[in-house]
Amino acid sequence: MKRTTLLFLRRDKQILLAMKKRGFGVDKWNGAGGKLEPNETVLQAAIRECQEEIGVTPISQKLVGELLFDLPDVEHYCYVYTATAWQGELRETEEMRPQWFAENKIPYDQMWPGDSIWMPLLLAGKPFKGAVTVEKDQVRQHDIKEVKSLKEQV
Image (tube, rainbow, N blue to C red):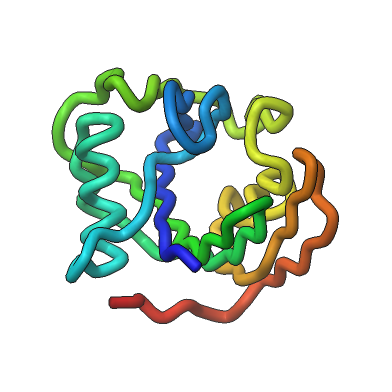
């Protein structure tokens, strides 16, 4: 199982999504993120991925969710962050093309199956944990619950 991160920038009832241009998740809107490198903490990975994929350094990141994604051929245990402040200018990279979306106009039909299940908790600022099983681009099973709090992982 791979440990991964996702980080979503937020401002004024908007969320930043980025179109994945290559590799795993190509042609889907998502947050910046990816797998941990050796000897890297979860938070370090989330920050590094933002820097590499959308050109900014988050400075007010908050752990808001933990999700087990059971996908064909791979399982990801993902730590989900949000940030409301960052340094640097957003930019498109070879990996991702960032774009702001109003919170009520999120393109769920162009995202990973299951994102529409847990994203409302993220938008409401409610911490969550759970699991999503995806087969043939459809959610086969999910169990996502609001929790009182989350403990920062290393």
